[in-house]
Length: 408
Image (cartoon, rainbow, N blue to C red; front, side, top):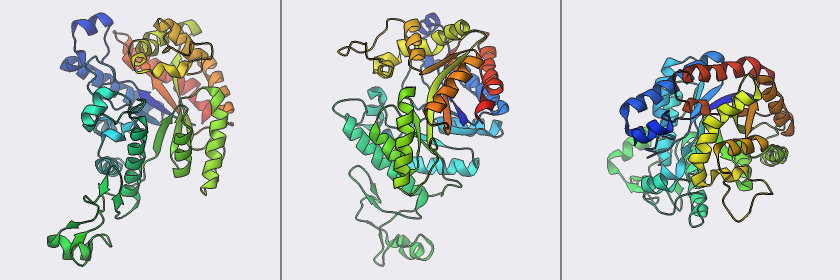
């Protein structure tokens, strides 16, 4: 099982400093500090043998939350400063993007740094920036009036990215995107003879009409595609059908049925896989010399951000249990209670390295005995204070030396 660090991109500051320097993410000194911290984590992860590093795409979070709008651009710098680690945007939000540009950018990175790029794709749930970037008020997931349309756009755009990588030229006449535009063809007499002689076959007909487009460059290697998923059955089916790696955020009790379903769907589509191949899990992990020490650190990092930020978007509903009131949004009152719930539901693996290793082993066994990936939500990046770098490196080092070897 490979381990990929999903690194937070928070501008680290105390609540008081965050308030006094608002909007702190527009403070260039503070933002430079975030980039340096992230770069340090990338270097340590590379030295310690981690397999991948990723972060989310988000925009307009002036409060100092997830603050990298274009991870791929930043990774071009980090890849030049490291030796072997793979970089994985987790995730590029396709409904707010041009799928052709996404395919081009990732393919170019694969030539710049061979073997060192993967990609996650997600649907996008924050209206503040999804609607603004897409210039569309019905484009966001998890909203009653736009969720179905969001999935429709996501599926269409992802198919375009994959075709752009796999086919020398193609034509797509979809509900939300056309290749070429317009789909019925583009009159281009000037390039007709040249393209017929040297371009992709069937791009241009004898009358000089462009019917297909060839996207370049072709990837040097096809990036592994990661698809995050909580409970959506359709997302799991689509991932298995198309050979995408499914990253499960769901509880351990759902993992066995998920890996079995993935294996069955893959077999129906001509791929006979061992159970667990093509599936990964997403977990928050916090380590300490004692359970209490690790738990307190989890409260300061993941607990703080999920209580004070993500709760507003309904993300904490993933930690719901049957005894919770069904008619209200989940709110446990404070970061400590929420952190306890994360641990109880298995979203947080917390404790000494031995305790976390045992819990991780139980999770892997629940999935059928093997998994392809563990994605570690690394909220230690959000720490502020002079001791933050030492704590961050200590978390990575303890995992790399005391946990990771057991799952290789």
